Amino acid sequence: MTASRLERIQQVVRDTGLDALLVVHPPNIRYLTGLKASAGAAFVSRDGCVLVVDFRYATAAREIARTEPGIEVEVAGGPIEEAVGAVASRHSARTIGIEAEHLSVARFHRLQEFIGAAALEPTERLVERLRVVKDEGEIAIVREAGRRISDVGRRLRELVVPGMTELEAAAAIDAAVRTAGFERAAFETIVASGPNGALPHARPTTRKLREGEGVVLDFGGVYDGYCVDLTRTLQLGSVSAEFRRMFGAVREAQAAAIAAVRPGARAADIDGAARRVLEAHGLGEAFGHGTGHGLGLEVHEDPRLSKLVPADGVVSAGMVFTIEPGAYVPGVGG
Image 1: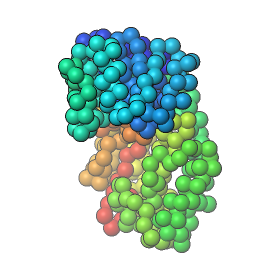
Image 2 (image 1 turned 180 degrees about the vertical axis):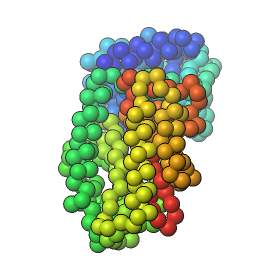
Image 3 (image 1 turned 30 degrees about the vertical axis):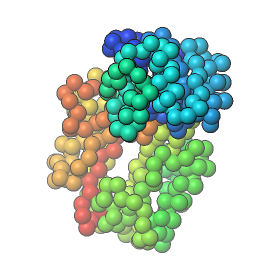
């Protein structure tokens, strides 16, 4: 699996006229090589790959190199950038692509100190374009993760009850996510009760959950490196007619967007299917974000389902994404 991914990115390197691509974004390094690390780099040349790591990841990197053809290891005795410079020199690389979105200005300047006469050329999302379509192994992992997070979702009425604070409810959900076999939460769990539900990315507070209110719950987990994301709105006891109307409209919008999903569909059209339903219910202004986002090694990745996606942005078989339209009305909830 790793070999085929490296071959694909090496072909990209050749096609773009680069001598090498320096990959520094940890999810991209993991995707290409299998290395789970919080720091380091992968120096991908036209026909090879060197994992540049510090002593913390030396053993893991060497084990990967032992089992995966085409991968070498460079253990940095000082700054990672200095070791990258040494690797670039050995490969006589004159033009090196960098991940513009993930390389800070400070790190860029440090690289320039050690890279010699080689030119650093900004690139945009070269590895991410490969990651957007999942292979069979990735899809199997996400399906299992989806099954497990759905099990947590079915337990929400026992986990989240009136009288708890939002913080306590978030802690209960986080514990359930861990118990379900996830490595960690995919992001900070959102519990937004009553009027706080009108804040799309509210953070849990000491506010107590009350009977007769809705509470927005947004949580996820990381399973074997892959993220899943589940949003539910739980009704605590009797709920106002206006809130029920909003809930029904959002559920209808979600169904419309799901019905619009097929290989070749424009991402903006899937978003539009949900948006038209909410507009028909007078909630167009209450829906301020996109309909969905990709899932994978990161919880927010391509594809993006939004009205802002260019006309040539289409979905295809193997993509994994959420469908989560919403409506947020100040003073009422979301």
